[in-house]
Amino acid sequence: MDKNAIQQLEQHVDELLRASRRLREENMLLRSQQAAWLTERSQLLEKTETARQRIEKMVSRLRDLDNEL
Image (cartoon, rainbow, N blue to C red; front, side, top):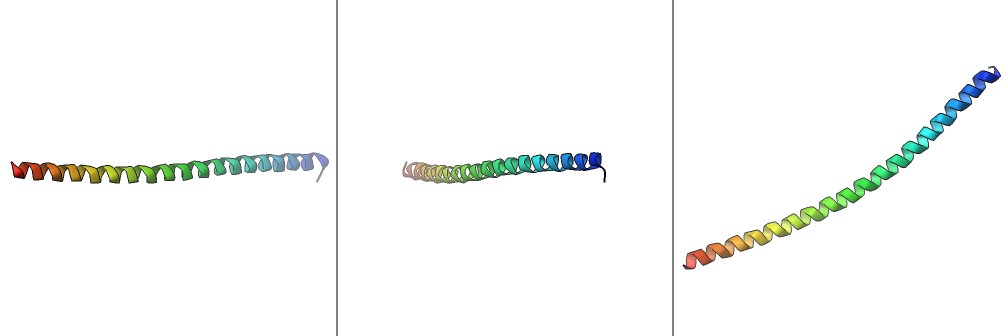
């Protein structure tokens, strides 16, 4: 291999290393965001379930009041 070909190969390797680092950082960021979204989703599901239970209790109490009248 001549000197020019070796330099080109080195440049390609450097580009691949930079791309690999960038993708690794992006992947870490995406995984972090995914974890945060999963936590938020879990909290929202819990709040939704709590609200559903409260609404069911209110409806039941309203039906009981209606039956008393």
